[in-house]
Image (cartoon, rainbow, N blue to C red):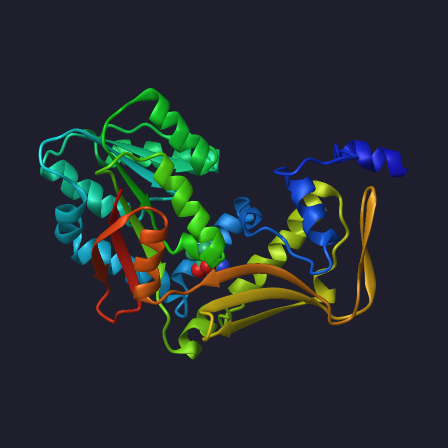
Amino acid sequence: MRKEEVGRYDVDHHPKAGTFYGDVLAGLSKDQKSLPAKYFYDAAGDALFQQIMRCPEYYLTRCEEEIFKLKTRELLRYLFKDGEAFDLIELGAGDASKTQYLLAELLAQEFPFTYRPIDISGHIIEQLEERLKAEFPKIAISSFQGDYFQGLADIQRTGNNPKVVLFLGANIGNMSRDEAKLFCMNMRTFLDAGDRALIGFDLMKNPRIVQAAYDDSAGLTRQFNMNLLHRMNHELGADFMEDLFEHYCQYDPLQGACNSYLVSILDHTVHFPNKDIAFASGEVIHMEVSQKYRFEDTQALAEEAGFRPVHAVYDRRGWFVDVIWEA
Ligand code: AVJ
């Protein structure tokens, strides 16, 4: 029986780091249990995140959309040099809902560029390519499905156009400050002097506003977190029970860190095909950090990672910033 289950879920007895099972077991075996936020995004997670982005409390997407829609030319002016061919690379392109404003303007002004979206989801990449080709028949697009740095390495190997790298949506917020620094340093190694990066940061603001964005009244963020439990049940043969966990999120305005957790409400044990995980009543799984920054923090980060801050574009409320850095 046990063996059959293991077979059914194709579960390795020594799961490797970097695989869903390996990363999940490593995270749940630590004293302080945690799960990597990147595993939120299966098909159901993608759909829930789409809903979160449209819910009234989640201001981030609307702020950055406003910047891309109303300040397209300002972005263009600081990102691109006239006349020279370049690669416009986007890390975690998703549906490119903000980038499309930039693409439309670049095409209208006949900039010679290739759009190179990178996304971990093959499904998302295919849809995006199809949609953009329909919408912008003249676009040169070459997408990469996989890890950001694999994608950057691939682009570096196959061409030597100047690069502009987009990393939008406060995706950098899913890293701790230290991780963000390593990430930016790593990104810098794929760039040449003069290449540019545009990064979206969510800024520190009234703690109630931040807190509400990650604890929406419709319970979408709660479902988004619970979805990872369901995903472990479906894909790894675990037996998490949603009713035994509560969603809890807490914004710390001193650190600018919004942390979300699932709290076990009883002593109980969750079974994977070849591993048991014990939960104490009140014990938490750390699910995600959404790090908020001061503008000055982003400038320090640029310098630490080997970039020169060039320009910054804010939404009208000053809640969000897209910074432009030069390598
Ligand atoms: C995709 C990382 C930008 O942290 O704001 C939204 C993910 N998690 N609600 C964020 C998320 C819960 C989101 N990022």
